[in-house]
Length: 199
Length: 335
Image (cartoon, rainbow over all chains, first blue to last red; front, side, top):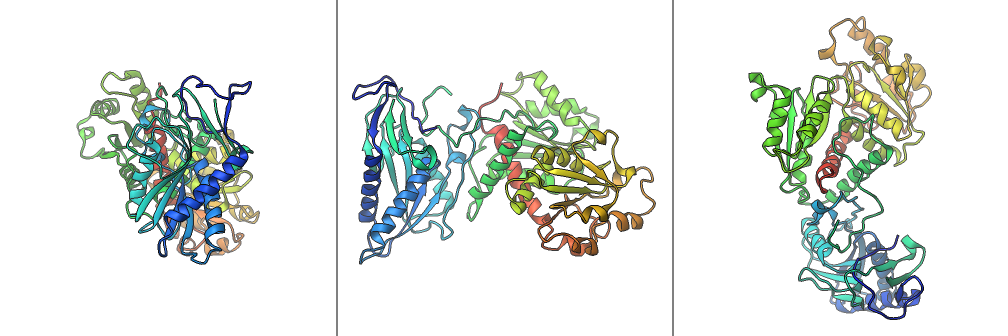
């Protein structure tokens, strides 16, 4: 099942029979991931930086793995080659502020690289940014795991409707949405194909 | 579920609908799998951290009500609650109004009225936690702002569900996540053992093949209905190479009759000696719920060997109890 973020009625645009509008095709998604990888490399290229990409389950984990692969492919070959990339998983569920508002959530995997996150640049990676509450929970969780030098945020889609003062450092696509709409992110690793649609 | 929430999805999974944890006999496979998966995630969430504290159950109150002695179970529940920021309060039969003759029902009602969100009960009478859960559900929410969850931490010779869950968690760590078709021997005093009953039901639910190895005098009535096979010959059974051997403590405090001729004869016929352990396949895990009576049901050298998972069981106990408290207390109240 693809990721959904709820919103309101359809704003219009090229819509198919099922009322879905394609936001990113498979090729768009690949280009977007490549661009974000370049941006991360550019922004963190300073001397001997270690970067830890932490994916937020479920699809943020797949995106973090893809970004790490791209960064290694670009940066590893280059002359400077100063950026080393680790990748891990952070499940912020235990830090959410809305646990009591809904039935018990299942937990997901957490896997922090063994070298830890002290004094590194952590990039949190998620598929869709909306209220910002998941990111807040992730920031709280990070604090208990160590003290990074800096924390940044990368998202594939920023759909607005923020409820907290949080913004992303790397955005694949900004999509103005209504609350009742769904932004559905599909990735090969979990859904069999790549793409982002609005419905 | 009204407000739209960002990132509302989890890995596919639905609430498991657990209101109390009273037995493993009535635990469904999906519930058991969810609890064990959560326990594994709890362990991951705490691995390698300087601060072993999660904010998840902030503001929730867990009372442990123990009418019998216990070190590991009680400490384990208390640690589990504290690591998730719940307020944990310990009540023991000595030092409470129980000594003044207060009934179990009144004690439970008092704890609920005082604000307990969960009551963890150990009691010498089989069925006591069921009664408490029934009373509290009946009283409803008149004194409290919600449902009070009851966890059975051992009732008489009936059940000890969190012990069985931690044993299963330990076996999954050692043998792999799938216990389907794994062969587990439960050896010793089954009659007095709530651990044996809970494990027999849970392991069978998880797909394992359970064999009880016990003298005929130490089998409970009704054991024919358990999902297990039964044998009286330890050596013959160990020769079949079980994946796990769970040794039970000989419960001298519950034995008011002559169940076997002498301790020496018991140790010779049903104790896990070094010689017996040496006949087991390399991968076979030895479990003991503790406290172990060394030299009686298990030889010291076996209890301290690498195949014994006794310390891992205690560690798994904390994660399993965190998982149980999480599923009972973290989400919205179930109607």
